[in-house]
Length: 293
Ligand SMILES: C[S@@+](CC[C@H](N)C(=O)[O-])C[C@H]1O[C@@H](n2cnc3c(N)ncnc32)[C@H](O)[C@@H]1O
Image (tube, rainbow, N blue to C red):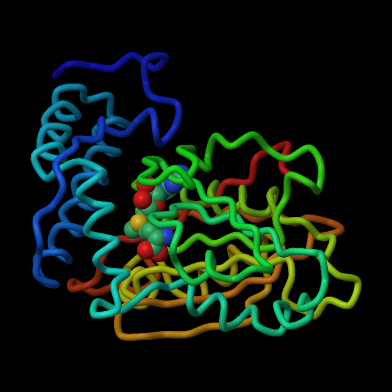
């Protein structure tokens, strides 16, 4: 088996990802779209495992399979279809509904809410249609000029509140990340980008906050992850859940962030929490960095 030496291993998700292939998906049924998304997730997970094992041959084989499916671009097209009205809709509508009290406060003010949308597929979703929100959109593979091509895991950490946001949207992104430890790091990273200074002095109790959307089975049907575990990780980071909505497919949550005065970050390992043969293996592992604050 061909080995990848440690210093040649990709440092980040985007480096570790196979190249995108420009082969737009044809018009697909809802079932075929779901299957395509599932196959992408499975291949990406196997690829992350092969990379961690240094198995270059297997990585190459999996890259070919991912490219044969149409690469990241076909995955994004399938995800965009999932956002269409007939396939469950745009998740940012829920965010706008939840932010309404803050948006009402901003009426007639010059101040605007700064929102970072990680994993943005379009510049025309519900949050982009609100005048009082300034949206910064990033994605590993930008599909429009208004979306910056950037890996959130490599976005330079802010040095002032001007580089921070009142709201971060992480909608169907955490489950896309193939490695559980990187998922934990991604959640921690969100805290570094949230601004504790409200856009108006008379703000409510929602800001700063993280909008998190996951496929419901990640939380409700995993052997290694539960809603209690998510709650424990989030509260150790300084988050408190304000809103929650469950549909047959997705779980939406709004988490308010408050920088802990005395951070007590705990480690969360992969552990059997909910045994069962029909369950999936989704999990989030969190290892506090020594210098994390
Ligand atoms: C399933 S799509 C979700 C899109 C949209 N937010 C939604 O709710 O439908 C996941 C997107 O997240 C992007 N993504 C995953 N990890 C990312 C990262 N580290 N930085 C930026 N974008 C990322 C992928 O490129 C992909 O376009």
